[in-house]
Structure formats: C-alpha cells, structure tokens
Amino acid sequence: MDRELNQINVIPLVDVMLVLLVIVLTSATFISAGQIPVNLAKAAAANERQDTPRIITVTAEGELFVNDRPVTDEQLDATLNSHPRESLVLVRADRVTRLERFVTVVDRVRGLGFHQVSLEVTRA
Image (cartoon, helix red, strand yellow):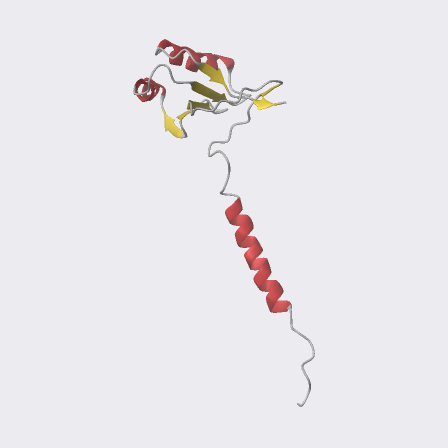
C-alpha cells in the first residue's frame, strides 16, 4: 500500500465540466434577441432609424403583439391611442403571414392617424 500517486484523476473534472456545459447550453436557449419568433422578409435596402418606434408584430399564425405584449384586434386601437400620432409605427410581419392580415393591421394603424408606418425586413 505504499504506492505513489503520480497521476491526476481527471474523470471527476470532466464530469463537472460536462454538467456545466449542459447548464450553459440549456440556459442559452432561453436567451434570444426577440421574444416573439418572426421570420422576417428580406429586402435589398433596409432603413436604420435612431428613435424608438412602436413595434407591432404579426406572427405566422396571425397573432398581434405591441412592443412584445400580446393584444387582440380590439385592444390594438386602445393600445395605440395613448401614443402621439407623429411617432413611427414599425410592423414586423412573418413572411408567411397572409397579406390580407398584414393589410388589415396597417390599415387600422393608419386609420388611427399614424402616417409613419413602416415594415421591418432583414437585409438580403
């Protein structure tokens, strides 16, 4: 039993590192740039603005979100009425959204008096 320990047992170190890797990868999936998954259309020219617009998101299923908060069609008017009419409204629509749904949302926003309504796209 007078054997010398001239080697380091790395198996527990590898086990701990694998557990830490699993924790990091699992928590990284919850961190994302946008909370609402929208696959934006692509355009050759995209406009970069400095002010913060009101963002209306239309998902592929047709759901509405205003600044990442879900709203119904009836709540859209009430939500936007509290904002000044000169502010920019940015519509983020999934590229598979029905055109009729997108046009209806933009028409309602313009009907409330907002004249600066833009569509968000990604640069191609």
